[in-house]
Length: 347
Image (cartoon, rainbow, N blue to C red):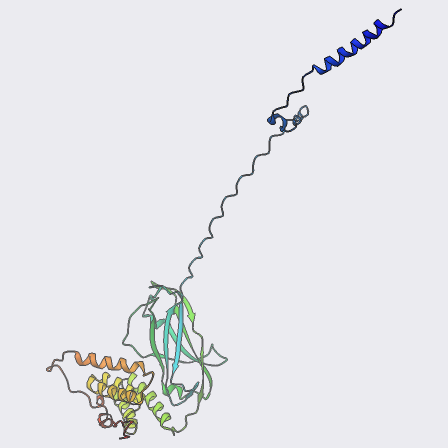
């Protein structure tokens, strides 16, 4: 057998195989979108037989916005009692003096016409009690004061912004003289059980003082304070001649005393003598100017305005009666004012 043809046959088959391999095309590149696509997710498993498929979890609902906090209710207005003792000196009261109590009732809420004091019977001041008790025994009332400024007899009082109820009460000197020296306190209460306005009861903070035995007034200041206190009590008791005597005795030796002049001016007005009141006020203002007071007494100007208002009123000569003698200030007040020395010349 000739081997050559077999060798050719094998070589030919090999070449055919190589040629066939070279003739195959290179695979086409996949699109970018296909190349970057995520791997396929496995299909959800079916629910077991007899069990409903699980529902998809709903998206959380947005929380509702919190409502704004409710405004705080306005406080209920109630009366507040303020008062002061007039006649004490350094927390002490001589047992021959009267004791005046100035009372002011305000609203706890700063609001126009916040509340009204209108008892069913009587005026608002009838619902106020001003009592004197011994320290340590607030339930045992020793004295009850009487309201003395009865000119304002309004039955009701309105409290609020710029509005208050004010009045003065008095413990007479004859009643104070009956007490033994010791520690006492004044307590002020308001009680309105019924009526058209506020109902309830409130009390002010008690005010303490020491009652001491009266001694002879030796200094000018002591004598002045005693005269002013007793004259004020006499004026409230409508004993004007006694008040004039007490004041004029002191003015004879101390005609430029501001406290004496103020009280005497008020007494002149009480006697319908505005000229006499004006003379007292002018003398007091002359001292204020002469001594260059930084803070002159405010009530001095109030008295001056009252005197000028009384002078401006028309007077019917036929109806006018003679003025009482006690309405005229003493000659010491009407005398020429003391001369002011010049700082440059000393004259």
